Image 1 (tube, rainbow, N blue to C red):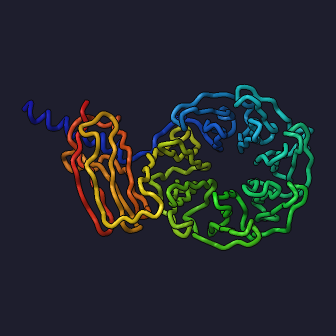
Image 2: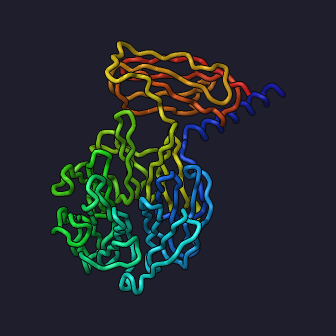
Image 3: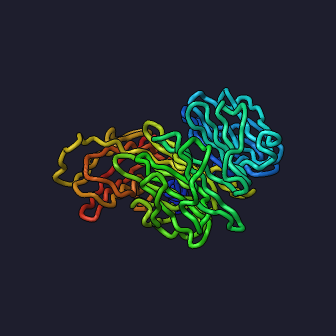
Length: 422
């Protein structure tokens, strides 16, 4: 009888660990309604809340795992974050105005909606060069040329301006998306004179809800207009091509690049979705709660995907941890076969390294299983290029014991044993 009970307890423990480590999204800032996310040049992450008691700004110094309240507002939504090269931080606080901090969020001053923005509601903010700060409102576009000391309404008056984006290569180029329930002027507009004037509508007939620019300069636009088509521009917004029709209205978009791997994440109705083929197709990223912002944060040995969710039960920031594989290949090195090496050190506690080689581009999975053959964690499930790689596996959350790790591609499959000692 005692032996039977012991076996049941062991099975329960393995099942529990499987549930935890196969689902890597972790719930943080629990019970808060999060509407915006931002990261400053130092890598500190900020979250902005929705209305009422969630009208706050939270800060995390460890990629979203722990949070501190640094500002409590008067009930208005924190719509957007921006950071300039001088270390100033700006937050679009809807009807309250623009919040500014010169010391990383320790203190804020309020640039009030009245009179600075003619009483209009702020919805977006981004920083250019030379003291330029750009603000979108529900009824027009404003700019400052003196780090936010003064603002003037310059263009797009009467339009519901939402996202604003400064071109990464040419700071004088500014993009604005227009979104409106009534459909007036919806689309994307472009300025080449630091937001003084704007072009005609470059992408009409669907609202421009979110804008993103990648490292190579390509632009992407999300819309909440059915059929929710993701659009791309490779010529600084002058022309656009349709990509995937997304499964629902998406409001947040981000990207991540490493070792020539390019991944796009979008968030909205139905959860977080991921594309590894440049936005042609998307699949749910094992997250089905309706989200608004999504953000990628990269540290030296890992990166994190963060999603903001509203609601008392599931609201907060959800964090997905991705350990980075470290490439061992020299540029141009040819890999002539597949291989999976024995992890080192072994036995280990809590970290070990797993080396493997891939000779053909394609989907590669690296998974860990318990002694019963049950998957406990997926370390890698991505399309990667040929090369030799090393993966640092942190097993701090797993109980000690014998496990197996399996590398699998279309043409190769190999399993090896590892041991965690605690």
